[in-house]
Amino acid sequence: MIRVRVPATSANMGAGFDTLGIAFNLYSRLEIEETDRGLEIITVNNSGNVQSDKTNLVYRAMDCVFRQVGYKPGGLRIRQDSAIPMTRGLGSSSACIIGGMLAANALSGRMLAYSEIMDLAAGMEGHPDNAAPALYGGFCVSVSENGRIFVKSTKLRNDLKFAVMIPDFFVATRKSRGALPELVSLRDAAFNISRASLFQAALVTGDYELLRYGAEDRLHQPYRKSYIDGFDGIFEETYRLGSKATYLSGSGPTIVSILTGSGERFKRGMESFFSENSHQWRCMLLECDNVGSVLSEI
Image (cartoon, rainbow, N blue to C red):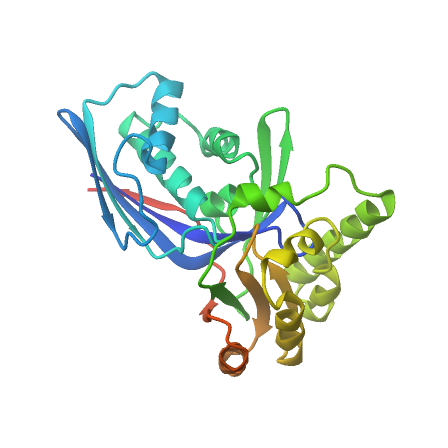
């Protein structure tokens, strides 16, 4: 039996659209074994109505690897147990893809290197910014070049907390991407390049007071915020409560704030804010997962 643990992820960090991502200590867990025949999919915490046939994302990811290496399993039993909220911008799809591919690679004789798995995963997702931290952990910068993905993962110090604010609604990724313009001005492009560069430097050096400026964005958040009621007010309240940087996670609707200290005061303040404004949101305090995916065989 193959066991895989894959972390939740947050992408599009500040100005790092389709480039910057981070892994959190919230996990999807898979148990997968080869059987004589057939496909059995067992799901735990199935709040997202996970498919139980060959359209299941874990199975599709496994099949991608099997076809790549020319392996034909007799049958499969897949058990999914995920604490990652689905369709909320926290990398639930990437966790399925990376977990399935790692398990399939192990079952078929470990013929693919991590870099090759990364290329396949980004091909399924369309971009690497969630898949990279799901696989490697830490804070990741990803670049796509002619079908190949280049990743630099940095292990962050443990003096940060991440307040992950999750609403009771979702925004479809396809719909959210459709809101983005095909072209942007040179001024906006330069704006984001400078902010993304500053964000990376501040995060890895520990100069956290600069994070707020590095989180400013003109490529996706201004176009997506209309899908989130009270977006500007939420951002303003996070900064009033001491956030070092606040950004829309992935395509949303989850919002993440980067904090120093325990984060408990911030959490209480945001929960009070949401309650007073009739917003159905929950706030979780997470840490960076510097390990990434973990696979074991029993």
